[in-house]
Length: 353
Image (tube, rainbow, N blue to C red):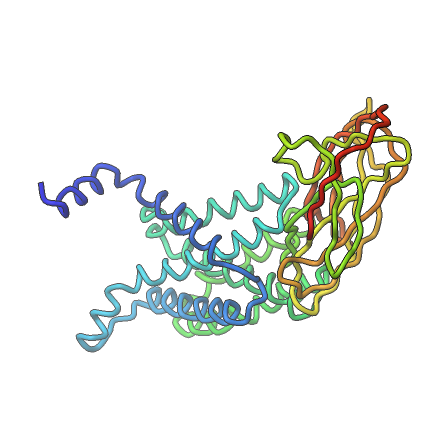
């Protein structure tokens, strides 16, 4: 059997899995290629993709037919181009939300978005009706502005979010106007209204991750000093616990302090006041111990570096949560404190950040 025939036979045998394979491959590729959420080229590229995808969807809905042979040849591939553009956009926003998610509720939102992304890859579902395509377009427009407006304002919160919803409505106006002239506006109005209402409900339920922030690193340490523009982070754990960030198995001697260190990415000229919340697991479950504010400034490629120190603690299981000023969780780390009765010198090693 010739090689092309083998490929064709393999495709026919596993055809139902092909969309899933391309979905996973495309998502992994974009996750590797996407860098900063505030990169100008990426922002302009997303705007162009939304404009072209929206134009193709509206023309298709209006029954557009090319008047010449070249146009007909190009139009023959408009469905593939449309879903490529939507797929690329949805990949990007899913990755941005994923990087900003930590809590179970935020991850549920990201998983749901992955489901929507798979809908775009599924031929049977995406060809079912225009509402699916227009719903995907509305989701892309809204996600684009939910990411962009906080970047432009240099902050997150209720006002930037509400302005992003309003801006998304304005951005959809040209598509609505085009369809209204052909008495097709309801086909966009309903999916768009559903998407907008869903985002509002999810935001106030604190289910939407706090884009454009993302937590790049967290660790627990025995000591911290700043030298020549770098933080030197001291840890004493056994080497075989290589998966830990610092001393997540914290052997505490009298006078030891717990240092929490984090790197948080935020766009250029972006400022935010985070809370570092310490929780201890006791007989009644997890309870908040205290919260330490940590202000961040954006622009650093590896993320803004900040830390919090705790000197009053007790043995047991602990976790530290990094939260935005409006209470949305950006990340968490677990560690265990055990009393160390030893008096011999400890071997200390350093991480540099």
